[in-house]
Image (tube, rainbow, N blue to C red):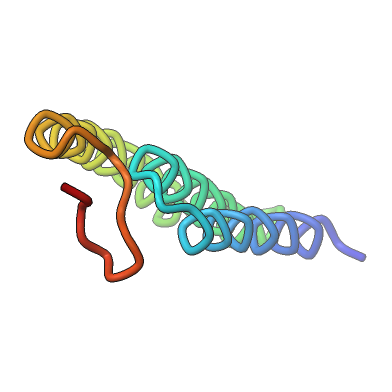
Length: 103
């Protein structure tokens, strides 16, 4: 098994764990963490694609990962601000079965 396959399989596993956390939990902070875990799996997959050919490393996926990290941090900060506002308005940071915040 090549190194690419190990990294790609690990990336898929990490992404799948993030999807499970996103679907399984109702708490909004856990959903944000699950989205960040999914982003980490995606970044690992892009880096593994960049290193397919050991003689010539492709810089485009690496640049996409750097840009993605900046976007992920900004989106996380925005989501945390929204969760804080939801908590102040409703008194809870969890979603009910219909996907609405409980009041």
